[in-house]
Length: 273
Image (tube, rainbow, N blue to C red):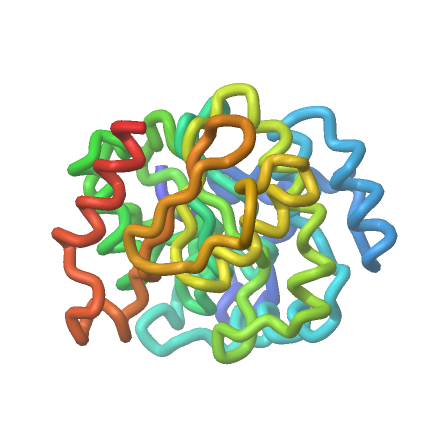
């Protein structure tokens, strides 16, 4: 089952987002899902989510950061020429994957024409192409590609999340937006804790966000803050591990700063732990 075909006149109307409950594959929300409209709402709705399913639904309708809401919806209206006839998700992109993950992979934020278009984190762009191919080789993904929600892809013992759930302008969330979004990450890591053995941070931004979340949850590494680097590894107080990996951005993969073999090595290490 793929992305739903546009309704008659959809491309002319330029709907800014997929309405909750409108039939988008894998949409966790409904028209009755409560919406966070400011940081206080967000904290309350994140902290009270009793399960990952409820948390994903609440994440996917958040409107707490006006700049990000405006940007993600503007992108969904304007669209890239290659996707001009496709509907865009245009909403926050919730965490996705195995509900009992051994490995939690944290990225920066959805891409404007990747997750913001497809509704699934790290799906539909070059970064996702590289990441999912490596996840498949590591035995953590059922398929080597991830093109859209509902494409049959499934993560095995792994979960993908983003530190910031909305696509930000120039891929740069502001500090206030990062901080406002933190309760979503805190609650997601908490709900995943019973099975998680490894956290894998893709890039320095995700490394810092993950460390901050783990510190708030009482599970940071002992001693001084570990420095980010590709292949960096830190033992946490709980016995879990934190790994670092260069982000699979086009800038890193096109220049050879991150090669498929380098990504494979880090994912193999995560799987082994």
